[in-house]
Image 1 (cartoon, rainbow, N blue to C red):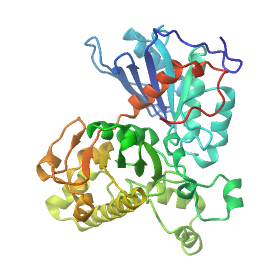
Image 2 (image 1 turned 180 degrees about the vertical axis):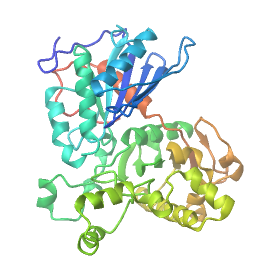
Image 3 (image 1 turned 30 degrees about the vertical axis):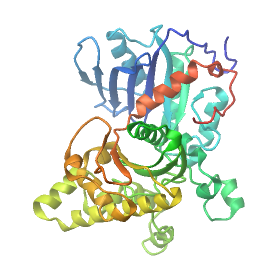
Image 4 (image 1 turned 90 degrees about the vertical axis):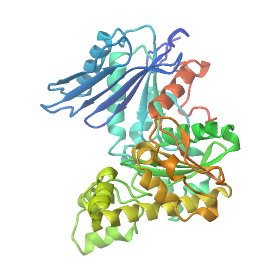
Length: 430
């Protein structure tokens, strides 16, 4: 069966591989996974696309092949994906392989129309384009990656997995901003949330760690990387999240301010004479930890504190933790009962001082961290709370690529995956 929109045909059931693409404005991250057993076959990155110093790093994970790196001009995303295809072909896992079931694309903003992974048709791509005004830094790059992959493999199902999808289960009272409803509706102003694939994966893995079904568990997920977000997940469904219309709202981040009085924008325009673009750069790229102390690397901030008592670094850390605690408390109230608090992403998985400080003083809420368990470094999901703690505190390494691949593979194996048989909205999340 052939789609009237894309010309793609469903792959046979024997095809078990999924290529996951994360296209940025000047980069492409990718992983090739075999969903027969979830094994990674290759990972890689193309960065500085369009520059003379473009760089491709490709790491095969089977067959004993070594990591390969080359620096040479890569003109655009099509050239980048062609280079990726050549690297995969050299490993015997190229884009022309009959074992490739689909290509999965991370798409940052799906609005309210997309609550699940969706086979990309002309109509779907048009809707992603219509959302560019609310995701100007991300959706255009995602669209470029999709179009490039379609050109290289027009016969293969291309599937979008949206950062916002997991958060579409939020009740309206959590998603709405208290502004004029007509204006909000006309301009799609509401809380959408991001990092959804990570929050979905981590909340589910946390339930497994507790030996329970996700439907039986309430989890506060703290995705702490250079970008950071929190979510309240009740029985496997997101009921609140910290990022909003854009990824700027919420927690203190590496370079983003997080929550701020919106009147600060007016003040900067009127008093400082700053333009809209200058304020945008200030809040997104020159704020957060880097704005407070000049560093956005938590390892360096802790080194400055521990070795020299650096006051600016200490203040940045305290501001970061204060905001984190406020969200833990707020989401505890939203959920009513909490089974676990899960830390994930680069800072959440590796910064023991952040985890300890975030929970300190919350013993009355049933939260505590065991110092010995917290100090252990591991790539495995684990509990770091003492046995007596009423609420489990967990460290759960996120795996957004695996989550995307699993969603993509489940979709292309279903009857609904036949392109042309789907509308713009997919099935609800489990």
